[in-house]
Amino acid sequence: MSLTGGSLDQAQARKHALNCHRMKSALFGVLCEIKEKSALNIQGVQQDDPPDPHTMRLDNMLLAEGVAGPDKGGASAAAALAAAEGTPDDGSLEHADYREKLAQIRQIYHVELDKCEQTCSEFTSHVTNLLREQSRTRPITPNEIHQMVAIIHRKFSAIEMQLKQSTCEAVMILRSRFLDARRKRRNFSKQAVEILNEYFYSHLANPYPTEEVKEELAKRCSITVAQVANWFGNKRIRYKKNITKFQEEANSYTMKTAVDAASVSSLSSQSDSPVTPNSEGYPAISYTPD
DNA sequence: CTAGATGATTCTGC
DNA sequence: GCAGAATCATCTAG
Image (cartoon, rainbow, N blue to C red; front, side, top):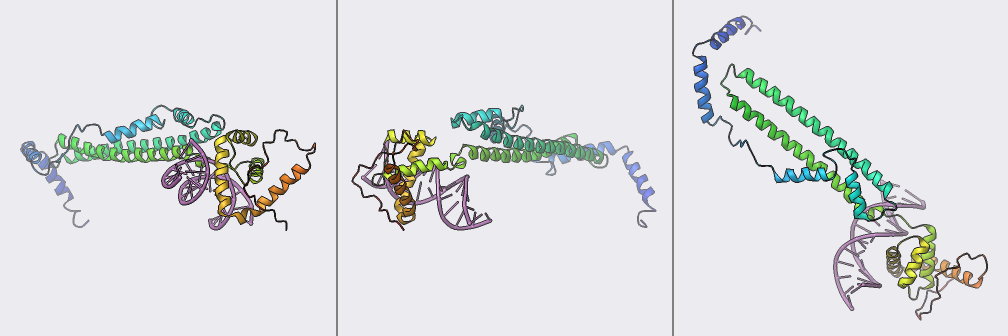
């Protein structure tokens, strides 16, 4: 304070004198001209850069996924998902979940985008005002201000692009989660496993059900033929890998079928049992009671 | 939370 | 094209 206090008025007066100097505008003109030509000038600023194909791709994808553009609640994406899946039965619940998560992504995207745009315009006007203010005391051309604004916009559009990219990634992850059938794996019902095991162990010598049998088993278990085939494929290999581990299970099922066969009584409600007796000559697992 | 179980997928050989 | 084998991703019991 002691340094400036006394001379503040003096400095202000000098500044004012400078601003009002008759040569000021001429001097500024020359300085600006030199600046435009010199290295101080902002280099490499192309005003009309062509639309970036990467950005366009991101925009198109966000539009297609229902994240950008009019709010459809991800309906189109969910529809596409349903079409890709081809399973209209259990789809509604899954799609509701999908839509909900997509809506979350959409909301975050728009909030962040708005924030970005607002910050950009605030920062731009701040810098513009600052430069205009400074242009009174140092040579700054309107073109320079314009270029500075362009630079700011470019920086912010880079941030926007990153936002778009991460949003796209999030959507893709979400999509893959819902499209990947493995992620929707549900264990078969106890009854279904029972039916399949029953067939497997009673045909242990040749556990290769025919197409007809697979269809029958699929119907009884309320699963698809492919699932039956998968189950038998897995079962065969896992059984073979560790027979001792399955010994107990095998015993329980062979016993069960033996009991069932022995008492073909009225209590058996399975009139359409596909469990055909094992006619092959393969050695079945031996029953070893404890 | 973790290990084991389990349904699905992918690759390979026949 | 099918079966076996390996692997993945999820489910589930403890």
